[in-house]
Image 1 (cartoon, rainbow, N blue to C red):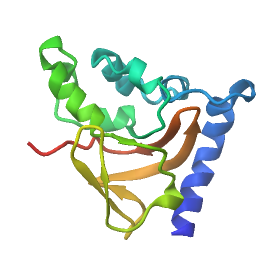
Image 2: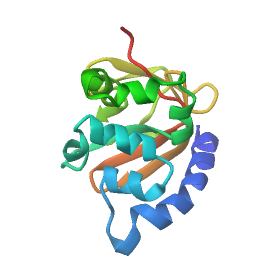
Image 3: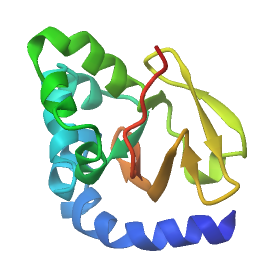
Image 4: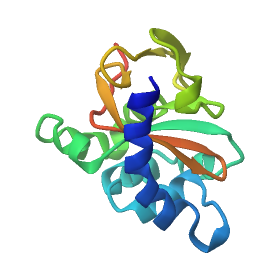
Length: 161
């Protein structure tokens, strides 16, 4: 597990240096995502869902953050449909499925553990081949923020139902 975590931590180093600790103060989850530049779709979705204030709140939160590429891999028209006001409840359910209450660092993970999400369902963490959250691979782990931690994932995970 240490080898897997080390690879992810090495990749996170440049992102941490340029975003999370700019000016010597850690930024919150939303500001860190905005500054990273690779979460424009996620930030737009968080805004459309009305979750900005929540994710700027005290927390702590653990966010499994899909990249813009992860959102682009969804079937054509999915993101546009989810961003429509009439689909806000579905968007909120998907986004809150990516958030776990508390600050869960990669060193806290155990193989096949279940983590209850803010949405109410649980996600399964698998450590057999890298770090997986459901069917998404964690590509960068442990980006600390003032109100939690971000783990970057390569796939949008969807709750069942």
